[in-house]
Image (cartoon, rainbow, N blue to C red; front, side, top):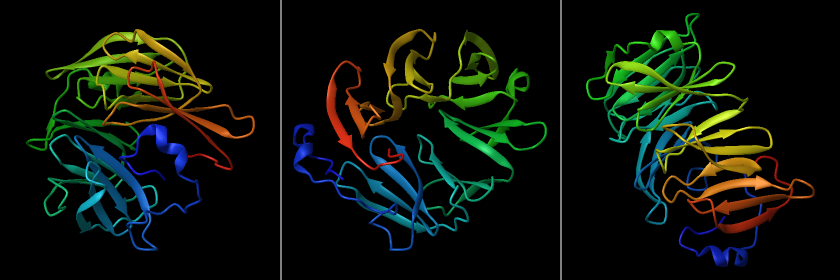
Length: 277
């Protein structure tokens, strides 16, 4: 655990130590379950009993803490660019609030498999037999008819943070663009990918992961920008620095790249860690 303001060159000055998986800023038995980041520096963290909001630009100052009745370790939290908060509290029971006070609930839905904020849209994918999709305008919280969405509802895997693109997964990947209220096929990409992650620090990029490498591609064309050998871990949504792991022979080696992926900022060797992020 390293203070946010420390230069990367000084990382080695800090001795490693083991910690358990609950947020030390919470009470002893109140575990952090999930978190979401909203630019320029707000970190939203949910536990079983509350939603906490921290200022990452001011030494993780706790700026808001409100009660939240969370019923599952699989709960999820996401936030929109305008500060709305959506929480899947348990088994697809989703509630959307106008802000982090959680005082004003603007939408309740059950049977939600996944959900995505993107621009002025909220996309919900359901567990039902039809695997139905509903898109909401977050300003009115009214459903929006999107022409062409029904053709892809069984295959949608994610939506870009700006709400302009959707990826659907068949034997290959299909890139779709939301133009007005129409969904338009833009491009396809052959190959098998384990996961797809839109870069929240650069909306022009999307990351495709496989078992032993990952690819960074242009979101508009799917043209390849860079292939990296290793396992993608995360991208800092504030700086764009990328974290990945490699070399599993004795210990896991973590590598931090700059946002252009052409400079190694840090190489960190660890031991006895199963699946850190």
